Length: 126
View (cartoon, rainbow, N blue to C red):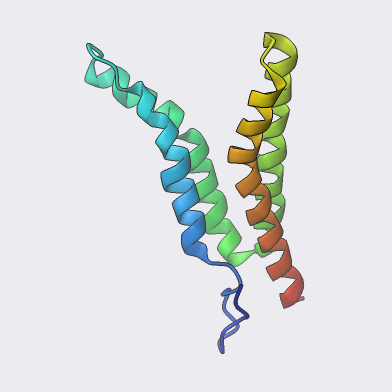
């Protein structure tokens, strides 16, 4: 992590890593909408539905660049929300617990880390 630059801009966090996570990692999961025989309209609707979390995270990122506390709380809550959904699926579907833990580490782990980094940056600016 780097400190603030001469202008006091947010340089503690590498914003490129957020963009990579939001746009590439989460959007990667939308590639399963491509199936043989599907119409272009169904594929577009599927891509839109699968990319709603990416769009929400991108909007949160834009807000968080100006207000770090929003990023800290927002990304941390997104991780908690995902873990809640996974726990709900474990209880209601008989999903194996070790799969749920691996999913949570892969998806919610980076969200928690990003939230913590925003919190660190916010505290340094206070």
